[in-house]
Image (cartoon, rainbow, N blue to C red):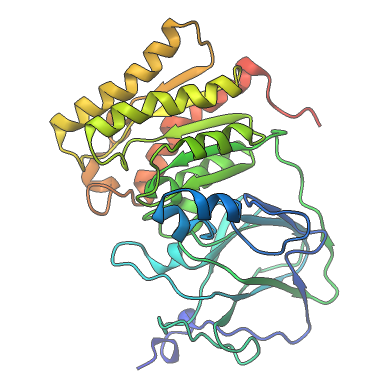
Length: 367
């Protein structure tokens, strides 16, 4: 039985009658959060050569997952249809498909809906126009007026092609600029990548970006945040206003964390002497109470050593307090990965630190 035959809210096919289709790679659409050269059309978070040469199977598998990639524009179209081709479909027992493999839509900062594919999980989505491995999904507003549109790409899926269909007579303009002139870089684990948000806009970097209005780059990799020198060197060379250093979970042992956490920080600091860096420790209990205390001490030592050496641009977020008010049972799906409430709590903990930095460093764009 196809549930969409019973409940129309589950239908994924949308008519293109009276619509004009655009590639998100063309003007005036603005893409954010990706790594590409001017002559490239693909969607990825790291350069191909870095991803293929760093000795990290997770990065090699996930660097083309589109977590953090967004498209923004302005339009008065009362209908928006997204057409997409995915090389394959990510399916996980703990990550909702609406988060892992779907796009979501915000208008004027307000969440509207998820652009979702059909129910076949074998990668054979067809809308009758895109062909195999393609899908279309849309949203209709109650009235026709100009809106700022933001669409987040999937958290755990590669994406081959993306098109936006608008009404033929609709205006299409550039989105407004972010408040900051340079993006914030988030480096971390599966939690940073977005597991297990119910839709892409609910991972904590995306929540912070929308509420505080800044551009960002998501360098979260499931089981792949290992603080390699190559990643430190790459992040050091990125244009950025702040680094959120959320490295804890993927260090397999306390010893490995001790050997890598501070050296990675020092490597980035050496090339970015004035960069504000926010260090975050784990919020969950995946290592147990006692081991979490030991790991947190390693991370706190990185912060304290920097401060004792005169570093005035380093900040610390104690992860053990992030779920303190609400309770971990309500904030995670498996005592490790946050649900939407958990990500909201993370954003609430990190957001004030970013605002403090902005005020101190005068990083807001004056345009």
